[in-house]
Image (tube, rainbow, N blue to C red; front, top):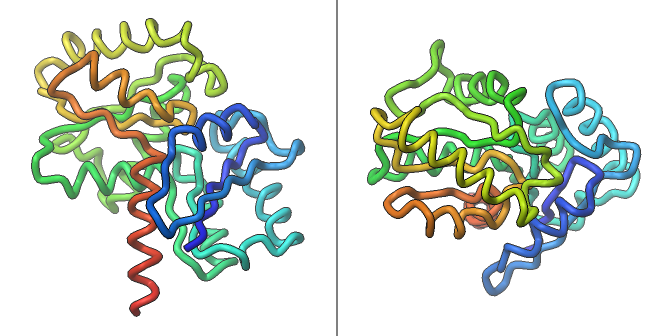
Length: 231
């Protein structure tokens, strides 16, 4: 089985960080694609998402990349348009990292309530709307989720050691004060640039599950590819 991690921004740093935290199971070959330099270096909202989709889809088409893989992970934590367009182009399983975390949070019967911790506050309304749209409901599903909160740290800096104290301080405030009454037991790490932070945060906050979006997306996609081979 060959899986392609698709980084729709042009940051090699983000790509390297994602790949470094993943250990694919036996029988799974994992490769990573980074968008060309003409794509945005950082995806900050709707317009940069559209721009990155246009650049990446054209590049994948022109180089016939999709033919070489069994499934794809779109590594932008959002309702990125590339998820649907790549699925239509390839006819193969495609999953977005946001959607993977939501599926996990909804399907794990031991979890009570989750929220998304993301890079910047500009993503907060976009990701909250993404939850509504993914669930196909009219209002924000407050029984299972609390509202998204941004760290106000650039995507390309999230994995930097010097930023971790700020991330931990923010998480402490949210879990101990801001969302204390919600009894949050699961935090969805809402950015590909946060890959690998789950282990540090889980150690600092016992009893709270921190979900790495890239790791869970890989596990779910492997299942989707295997299932598609039996249908």
